[in-house]
Image 1: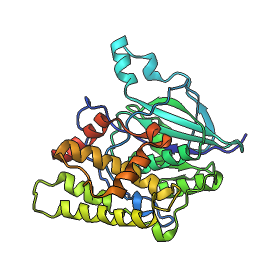
Image 2: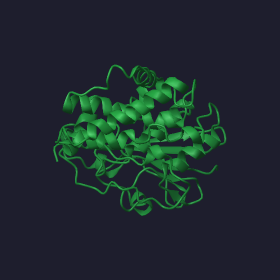
Image 3: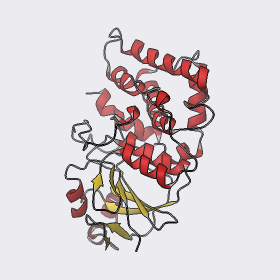
Image 4: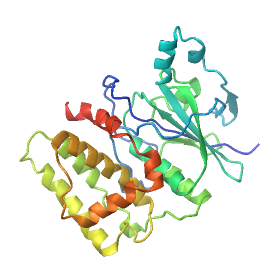
Length: 312
């Protein structure tokens, strides 16, 4: 039997779900390779994907071996159809990806996570898989009753978590995407080091401006400055960060710009200035890619995820 790898990811709560408990949004990840500047992020998670759930099957255990979960207990014990429908909305979606070398990828998503953070890094992993056309299937487990194996590998529920089949779990999206790049080198998504930091400060400036209650605190000016810097880079080197082809930096920045556009327009009535023509062309090119369409959150889910932070 080929070795198995696993990635665990979480997504966004439904708009009807109460505010989740506050969590520490720091990375606190194990030491590893230098992190990509785009991956130090927080924010609400992705919405549901467009994939259709498939039957329950095998999931990797802590040891890397497989265990069977054909009918989870919560599906057998629902007291009524209404309760079952409610519980089914709280499922964790899991994805397995098969390669020609018999490796198995597993991606897991939740619609009601206790953590509504780190999911932009998860999106980056999904976009990488989609851009490389790696096929995957969805599986389901209950996020409200987390399996023992998950709590053993991630006691605090940190995501994404990755197992390369050697029993060692990694919570670092840079390492995960690097492994995907090595296993599936076509199309290449590596960003040249000199362009790796382009747009890396936009997200933090966006969050500060979104949460700001003082129109004179300089947060809007700081965001506009970063967007202007992106505009100038794209004008000189575009249409994407690394020229004609999409790279890892674009896949990291795309969901952040989508969060920025949707959230700022909804909560502040603010839009990216029209004179930033290259930025507008850039977002249009990214948001219409098949990979982004398949993985982007529904706007209402995104807004619901940011509301607690805006109203805090």
